[in-house]
Length: 103
Image 1 (cartoon, rainbow, N blue to C red):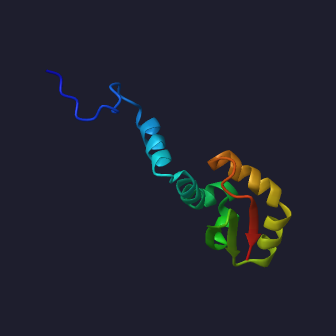
Image 2 (cartoon, rainbow, N blue to C red; image 1 turned 60 degrees about the horizontal axis):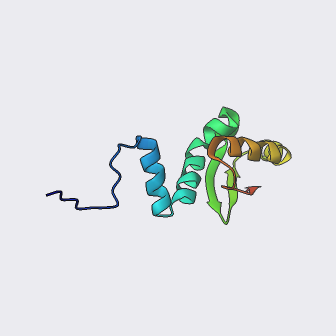
């Protein structure tokens, strides 16, 4: 007698990354995970100079808010907004943030 406690369970082993992505999709946490990933990668995306002068980074309504302690760095970041948004898309994927706002 074959006993199968979970008939929907897959029989083949899945790679960890694929299983993790399926779990995120099942619980509808993909967007939140990508947002947290973006915040943790902020220093790698923009480099040491901007990262050192960043005091806060958060996302609200698909807008990335960055609080900076330096006026000239804030101006440079605003002038290169489209480039930074492209770097973000390359790092974490498209659709995570639509706009960059410097505070």
